[in-house]
Picture 1 (cartoon, protein in one colour):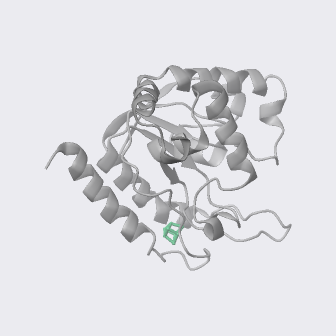
Picture 2 (cartoon, helix red, strand yellow; picture 1 turned 45 degrees about the horizontal axis):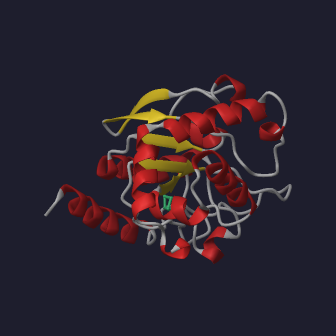
Length: 218
Ligand code: SF4
């Protein structure tokens, strides 16, 4: 068995167990997964919204449209290319439900703690070279963050589950915050996406995609 096929088998088992998880009584099942994509790059979202469990994939609605547009513009990778080559994780994998004001409920600390073991296992299995947390809650799982403009556009090195990995944070692409559309957020977002586009792990994915495009682009 090659190292890659061993990873694939471990990841298949991991995702099969993850989607059965019901650890958090206030979360609305089922957990959302992007599937067992063996990759050197991991994107970490916050938590699914109301649409993702129905459509059965992360970043399935408006925030996803914006996120995939960034990858298309800066990395030359379509949504199908990103989904087929990058592993999608999240701070919490289940939809938390609505808060009294009507926005999505922010996951509670115990729920974040419960779900962090899934992410730790993913770092152990994949040993990724690049992690891309999307949004403040996701970034805060790795580095201290008070203001987005202090971390967006920078590259960090972090250790998670014993794995040393480059970390390039992104702002959340939801329409709820205009941060990434206004100065200095717009420029810092461009800086972060250029860093991602030039990262060796992304370069490797681009080369793989040039040889074997995702099914929807053939
Ligand atoms: S949020 Fe995570 S730990 Fe909680 S039930 Fe969903 S998958 Fe399990």
